[in-house]
Length: 261
Image (cartoon, rainbow, N blue to C red; front, side, top):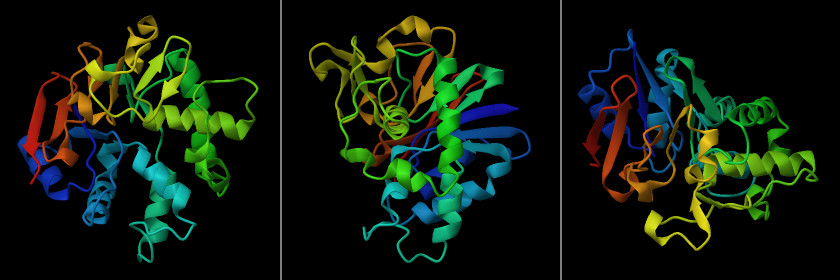
């Protein structure tokens, strides 16, 4: 079996079909891992329906866009599922997506944004499983209520359970940079050379925690897929900028690109 990871699809339905054709995707023998953020434009529903049909051979994880959708769906916000006939079906699908996925065959963790660089990977997985179980229930509304209005930018054991869950979700789906004291930044969206003083890419803090595992993420499009780390792989190659949707063969580490149409 060949395993591919595909970066943020963001409604790029036509590009996804072309990319699958380019890698000669075989639904009987290949596996596709998606790094989240399926929602962006009018083709998003078509894209999600296509990915859902592939589910036997795919793993899809939650991205920032899916968390935003879940957090706003019961408000009067104008979102892509408002009044849509598949609203309940797609919401149910999103609720059951994992926040991270560990691929044992390739010793790889798939995450949308990153891992908190002050925890062992096992600790992150333990916390994440708790959150995933709650997101599958109606209690997800409590966790995600006002999730982006908080100032939870560093872990604190004194946080109440909801605050802890919100911090972890923000880390996994939004974080880009961090400092040596443990403060994360979920709003920084620029290149590495312009990072504020005393901050670094999250994967360059406490690097020893990650050195034995491949970590594959999306989110930070300004990296354009480049991390300068062999075991840290960025999959977002700028499709939302009009650049490329890409796939990585985990067996060979070869990349495949399709230009945004």
